[in-house]
Amino acid sequence: MNDNTRQEPTLVLGGTGKIGRRVVERLSERGVPTRIGSRSGQPPFDWEDRSTWDPVLEGVGSAYVSHYWDAIPGAAETLGLFAEQAVESGVRRLVLLSGRGEEEAERGERAVRDSGAELTVLRSTWFAQNFSEDYWQEQVQSNEVALPAGDTPEPFVDADDIADVAVAALTDDRHIGELYELTGPRLLTFADAVLEISRATGREIRYVPISIEDLAAAAAE
Image (cartoon, rainbow, N blue to C red):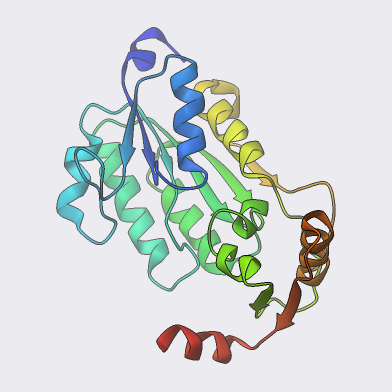
């Protein structure tokens, strides 16, 4: 990365979230100026409000891109539009966090690549910290984790490892054009993962498999 690029801020979308805040911390430790892209950021950023995109992109040289739910229909189009706007604004480098084994996420990868940006794609499996910092934390605390996860083993990955790779991709030209599959060292079913947490905490925590329909009904209540 040249000196001029190093002086331009790096935009970190989702910069207050699980991976994003870790990316911000690591870039700041390296002396890289950062701009947090979030609804609470200055200027604010909202995926659903395109009028917020230009202000957050102004003067940016590179960006870490993470859509809050890249597997939903329409996410690929949104990612593509943002990438095009970023390139038009002068952003050269994009590092995209994508979902492993998700068709819509892969469509998003192609849409971002079509923007012509210097792109690195990070395909990640489930974050280990989902159990302790976010989605399923309340369920763990209530001693019952109910998810439509099935019995397929997953290589859960540590959020700190993802952030390390993202920062390397943002700051080292050797990663341009690469696609990295990010996984952890062990294959665990969700039942296995919950059992590990139960043993580590000394509490009886149950895993309850449910259907997607049950999950949707619970969310609607």
